Length: 283
Image 1 (tube, rainbow, N blue to C red):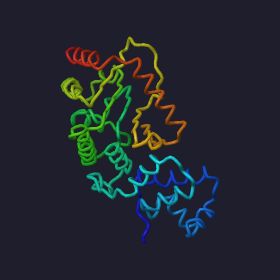
Image 2: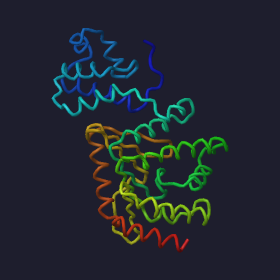
Image 3: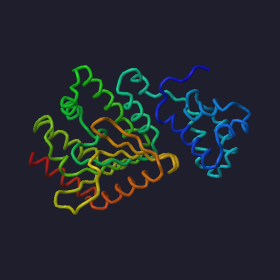
Image 4: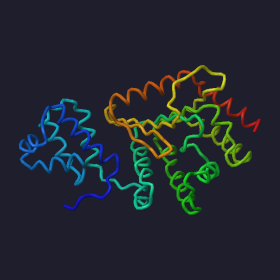
């Protein structure tokens, strides 16, 4: 079997969790290979997801490692069995590759929570607003690259309009609402879009006002993807050098706490909508 080329972060996570199971069991890769009746190289390839792994093998390895977390084992087996090729695959050969991971994780998330201080979350942006942001990218994007990014962003937004969309909570600071990227008309249309889309039952848009109390923040945009079980949650922190994926248990707990505290000081959805409407009138 030929090695898989550039597996996505979601596929790689299977191998990461199997390695964590093995390490918690106190087994070396060599010991695991003997129990499985294979080679140490094969265990390394499975953990690196170079060749992929079947649902049956996931369950076998979990048994060998003595993992008793059945919901986790079931979720990993389901991930291994899922060979769905989503719309994002058409972007596989076009950089940046992180867009592939982002779209796939959003598609499979049981729920999403995001926080932004300066920008409107990508899933809530209008094409014109997104275009204004991409025109300011560093390094500069060429016109066709900008349109590519906008196309990808609009396709990502489809998850909010599915028959059964995942619960989506966006915590946005008032500063992001008052930024006039693209000029007043673009900003006004963006605010109007926010008031309309926030009416959807699956979307909770919460605004932290300027006169609110202090709150914890990393200064970066944070996307929290809830997995089928908490152990498979993932965080993406958006930095100047690109997105950074985080899945260590301690760090996940930290970002859950940050989001909880930010949400606690944010206005309720109805009051947030009123504030957005008021800002739109002043824009």
